[in-house]
Image (cartoon, rainbow, N blue to C red; front, side, top):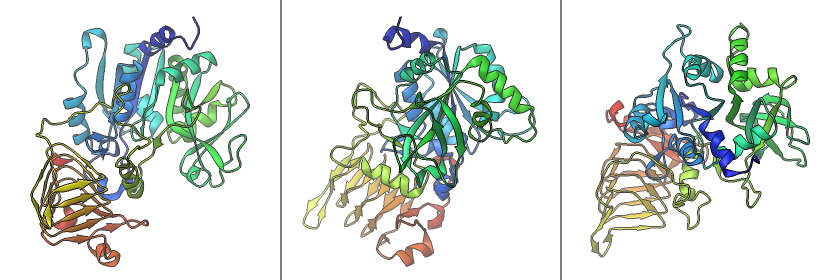
Length: 422
């Protein structure tokens, strides 16, 4: 049976355990992650970032999934319980939360490798043939079955998924140097001077933070790393550089199997990147197709009434143009232009929201003008609030990014934030 045979791939996915690293703080998102871990940050109108790797697992046929949590995990865990607990446990399917429970030491997860190491007893109990380690904080659609087939075909001990990024962007990633067969010959974590990929002068091969290991090999390397007092317990900084010389480590280029082009993939790790990725979705034909029924992105979403647009008086029309408006929203005599509104957002009369991302439960009072902003969940903007027209004034009250995007949170408005609305 060939490795590209669907039957062969389905056997591989059934023998795979996915472990999603979802404990990251996402410090470059600043106040947006004050109440939630980065994987729990909202995205795309109704989703959270964690929904993308989890949906990729399900769509790929991988239904044994552990989610490793640590930083401010309450809203993330609540989301997983509400939206991802309907698996058939009698068939060995599950999405389980694996908090930093200090099984091996009295410490929290010290790094990505340590997070897996502290859960090796669970992995051993499940006895998978392969372990798929996933970053929980990127937005993309990917068939992990194809990566598994590539891993087996190459006889790899470890396979690293990778994307092409600019040399400037590569300074924030793990960068791989590969030979003609895509075997990794060097790996540099966040290098000052990234090496371009073969055949290119301006693009580097960056790790997506997604790895496949043969389980026995993973155990061997994690035990060895745990005994090294100088290790930072990280896959990119420690594990990968230590094994590439003597073991078969391959790079898996993330490519569309039909076009050969690099598919959509975003690291929404800054306020500017978060705003831009959400804004892309309001275009006529966004690169990320959330309406694709062949690869659905699953999530938990409250049962809410449909979005509503009311009043059509002169100067007081409830309308949304070139926008995404989620369930429960009420646009009452206001204009929403080129914006993305999450659930239960209320925009009151004579207000304009333009080029903005508004998270759930926010309310925009009357006579407000909001431009190029990210409004956090639960914000209550008073009547007459103006954001995005005077950068200097905005910077005194809110956070303004290098690209001029204004982040507003309840705390900045003097309103009490709550962990229950993370």
